[in-house]
Length: 111
Ligand SMILES: [Zn+2]
Image (cartoon, rainbow, N blue to C red):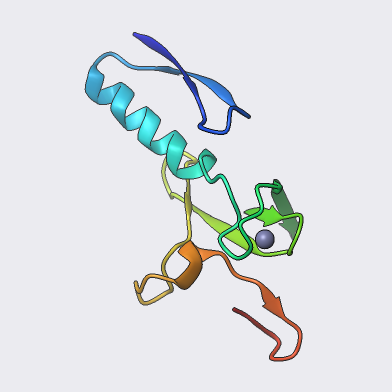
């Protein structure tokens, strides 16, 4: 079975495929987790860009707010090449602003 799914903001259409409703459900869930972020959680702007940074052949995937410069970083699953938004810190605690961070030049920290 094939399903055409459109993100809430209408910017992306994707065709998802699966043999069962469970497969389709899982595919939509994976897609939404990465591609359905509508707005910057710091300033509310919908002007967000997909950015891939290459640092010494390590690739960093992030959404960046074009208005305030905040970022949401993505980690990659070890298997299958999938991405997930980093909404928790390294100890498993939920981050504020759904994981969006902004560089503060005064404290030289992501906040
Ligand atoms: Zn912003």
